[in-house]
Image (cartoon, rainbow, N blue to C red):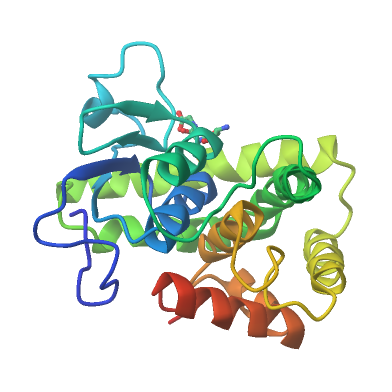
Length: 248
Ligand SMILES: N[C@@H](CCC(=O)N[C@@H](CS)C(=O)NCC(=O)O)C(=O)O
């Protein structure tokens, strides 16, 4: 399956050499995708079977996604580590400022904030079984898995994620998942304080993280929530332009 190249021009080129092992609906994977796109790095997306995970069998100890295997064969696990690796290994917009600077502290602050933001997403998108099934619908459109595999992933994935989301909602004391995300979106809008990006005139790692997390809801009912906040949506459009990742 991997790539829908006509829709995502900069993300997947014919001569792709780096490989990103991912799930299409995984917000952490989207963080890595945005960082790679902002840096203009060509890469191939490899969709991982969430139950068998044979695509990442090469990774003996780390069994989560995203995993990046870069053009030199270096394996990098974890979305934040991937963003840092990509930033230091490639030219282009700087996602991270030098350590111990005020700029870096601000980036760390909003990256930490994004860890809370991402936790609010599952309660929102897997709140009911129909919504959870919708979130897994993408799998029926992907070409790589067999008909049977697609159905197994869709139904088992939706059931598991609905349960995970319910537990997560309770743990976080979230009473209204929609309102919870609305409040965080307003907080982000306010913190932008009229700047184009959290990084100022160019996106930084926190912009990449928050935009990536937002993109993981593309096509789902939750997506409308983000588009309903004018300041946030304008920032999304600017991020879309910079990363060349379309919003539709
Ligand atoms: N801290 C990691 C979290 C990655 C993560 O939790 N990924 C999930 C998918 S969204 C995963 O692979 N879970 C294990 C599984 O599916 O078995 C990161 O930022 O990359």
